Image (cartoon, rainbow, N blue to C red; front, side, top):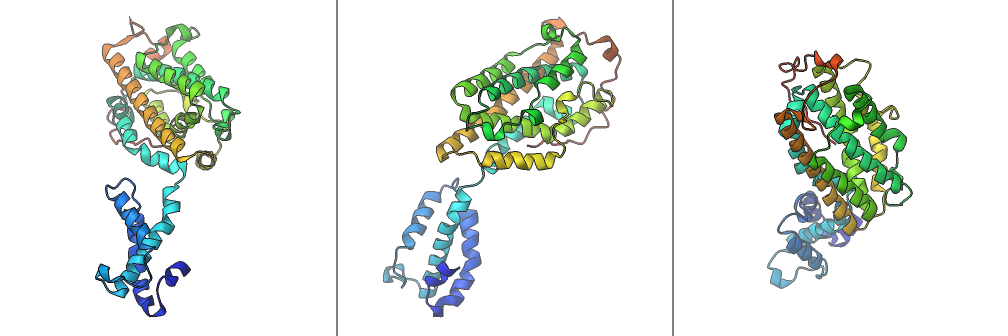
Length: 333
């Protein structure tokens, strides 16, 4: 406020006060919206306005009061530039992936899942794909656990899912599960991207970890309840180890901790932009996995063979909750 008052003489204080709320509104909602087409021109105009004399130049053809307000708007815009243009990485990530996140939630596979319309066959397939994805992700995380670009968000005891997925796969497929589970081409493509990032661009690894793990701690818990009910899985948790985070006693507090660590990662603006693009790529890869799984389900095949679930699971009525799960539950990061 002190800077704003210095722009005007005392006799212009009323004009300044009346212009304050307007200046904040413009600065927050319009002037510094970098995605807006007018952003470069408005930004330059505001900056130049601050270099004009404190008295309204004749060529502007406006009153001193109006000129004072315009300078107040300009300075407010500049003062608000820095906090608005340096949002936390987690906030930027959420904004950047909003559209593609919604696309992932609205694939046929996920829409059906959220309605409780998921079969044992589908659930086994997605669990198998997740095993390959998390195996690759966690291999690369281990490779980079001491790298400053990832070390602050290294939480193996709390987050890593490979062992839990192995437990689930043994439950669904039996002891020979490694020879039974399929790896569709889309899943393999996802795996290859994770390995490439971990080996060549480790600063992007946080994008994949964030989108996967925080999603599991958020919407994944909704999916856990849906799967348990639709597939009539044991209340003791067999088949659902993937969704169970024994190392996280309070998911909300842990997510806050994770975001704070992620926001503290040292990145220049160019790197942040690449991380945001990689996060969107992670969602697109996930969408492709869902689409491939849907295709496998429609063929009723698993590794080229007719599906044969374990005997003790075969008689379960996997469609029991078909009518009970009509409310669409959104799974968000």
